[in-house]
Picture: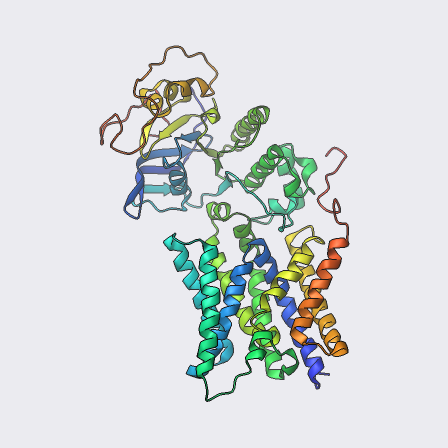
Length: 273
Length: 272
């Protein structure tokens, strides 16, 4: 049992779900994030990751269940992709104050913290993918958020950049004690530092530490056995079970396990409860 | 000074340009050019309805433009036709309905050309009060809401996640555009209003490193277009509204020759 720093609970979702136009986007999500904790949502496209994140941040109201947030919770958001049109002249310095006012010193410090100090006067359109991601991290962090939401943070970044960004996430967590909610559809992007991985497919398929989720039959059924090999966790794994039913578990109800089943908890120590 | 028609035209035009510059930047950033055109085309329908119901024309035009914007928002939610096609339908049908309605208004004589192309030389003192009163209100609303408006423009989802209301920003911009159209219609006409929104802003882009500077430069360039256009129309006896647009175009073309590459957005070469 690891003894990661556990602080106050920032967000708790209890049996939360969203319906839109009679269609269930996601349902029955239990999830909580505490200070200093990293929670990663994985799942295929349309599995309800973004919907779940939006419930957590308060953009979407749950149609079933409850969501409670620490009063005055401040959120920093790193978007999945942000293409800024050439017509909008925007320097890094200006981007830093997009949603709030900060002093020059605060801006310089925030950029320096992500190793982007020399980009202060650069136009955002001229940044490389990795540089831009760093600047977006700095922009989210300058708000001193309680919760940092990262939507597919390493998309479009090469492998070494990916490792560096994960290091940055870890650093941010350690120095600021912010809670971190990561969204990912790419299985590479489950970092080993994640406390809890929640695997979604319209509902919570399985959850636990990265190592536990990787071995879980539900995860393998959802992503296929090969996916386990690509899940980036630093340990050997020859002990997983293979499922014959392949990787396609699309719609609700066709799922191998029946509706209303109890989902397995694979961690000895589940932060989400 | 405001005694003669030419001075009044200058004052009115410069006042309008001060508003269309900054607002036009949002039109360019958010790719709302066609949307602006659609709202402007509906202005003629607003004129016809104002006369039919005998209400204030500025209010009538504003109301119809705002209704068209609302109709677009509703139609977009249907998720059927593309926004482009919807705008095409709204734009031309509102112009056509306006023209047909105007044809029925036999009891009043309407200077159709004046509404289509504007008549800035016929501006009255009352018009100037409306332009400056409305203009100051629009600029104040823009200034107060600048940060959320810009954040919503850069990324609605980011703005929303960090507690802003991008949908409100969007509606606010539409209403501001409807107001500008209502104010500007008399000056440059239904067909040319969007040019004052778009051309100065597009010209300003190459000369600006931040959104705020771009808004300011667009206002100044718009005012310069008005002055140059009006003097040009006086000199060569050309139509005043179109002359202003031609002046704005010429300034835009000249700006293309100014080498701005690497003028802004350079990186610091020394280590930070």
